Figure 1: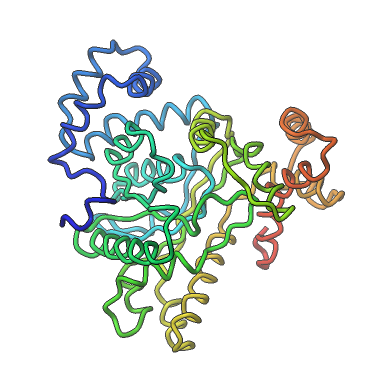
Figure 2: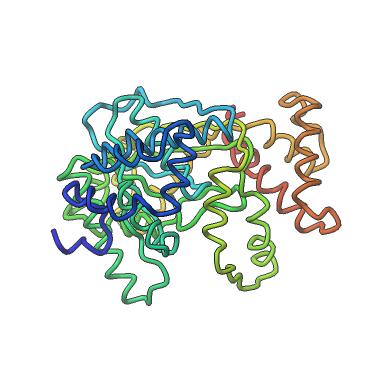
Length: 378
């Protein structure tokens, strides 16, 4: 399938050669030193050089690295809903997106722990400009989403990606993770962009688009972090957007954000697996005969699942009460938790900049606003 060579991860036959080329890279040494601090360098190098499949690389090295990240920078990962998934079955996980690397890495840790099919995961090619990062992403079963294309190139790229995702799900029995929108949600408002669903639908050979989506077995996923380790880094872009200014990233901004997400403090993390969308798709097909309206209704179904199941933390309630100058949710947090959050505000935010303060609080408060729209959701 040479047509997918520009975006696909490594085949298992290519894994060992890729590892051999990267084993002495300073970033590989840093990753392995972090993951196995008590293991001699020659030992992990020897084990790496014996690795010949993506699964072995993920299970023996990446899984251990993520466990170390959880131990050092969080108070643990909890999950719900995984019992609804069938073993040896592929699913299309459509997820809200908060952290560049961890969202999909944590999902795969949970899938592995539950004996389920791990994912191939979409990643923007802007994040893997450095050759080592591209190699590492392809070793970790990431496929590339091409960014910065002209409209014509975007159409061709979308067709290719749609076909590739269909190939993974329907022919290779490989689950797929994709974010509900391009880029991470920076303001706390998780919403599925219709463009993502339109891209997925390009691979359809069904008369009715919803029949194709049923085949893909769409599963909405919500992931929430008690503290977003990149919260302050998101402020410049949010403020620029609020002023209707074009935001231009710093040269190494993506890499700094990537690293901060991994090592920054997160406290508790929760992943919830929603129900496979099935009856919802039948209802959409029965109500709408227009593809655009069907896509809009599907986006709403995904949003309903993600927003209702999103785990709210004390930080979310504290931010809501501070932002709206109320004590409506004071029963959901302690004074100590509030003090810790206010301390974080002092450290991260220029309190003389009211717009920055408001944007920071809104990032944490918006999930409360969104979830409260669903009766009995809070």
